[in-house]
Image (cartoon, rainbow, N blue to C red):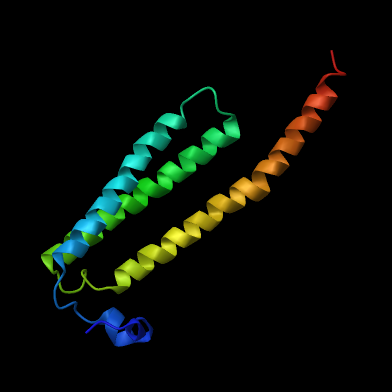
Length: 133
């Protein structure tokens, strides 16, 4: 029987999963397919001229995140489906999730810290440039 208390038990994370629920596999598959579809949309948006350079760069970063994490998730899902002894364990999904969170933090740091600094430097350059011939 599944209990939320299992999340705090190391045996749960490192044991061999007994079986994979087909509904859970389909839900995960749909989620990862949507993640890869978002890559295509974001890649197209990162090429559009109507967006600024910083927003296009943000779209490219998010597309890269979704692309790599989507492919990695499909690999993990494949090993889970095939019930490979070591590579089907639950802790790989924990590593995947930790990697996702770290990558999102770097993207947010770029958007909320680096982009305003770059915009400020660009505005300062523009202000000084108007006085130069």
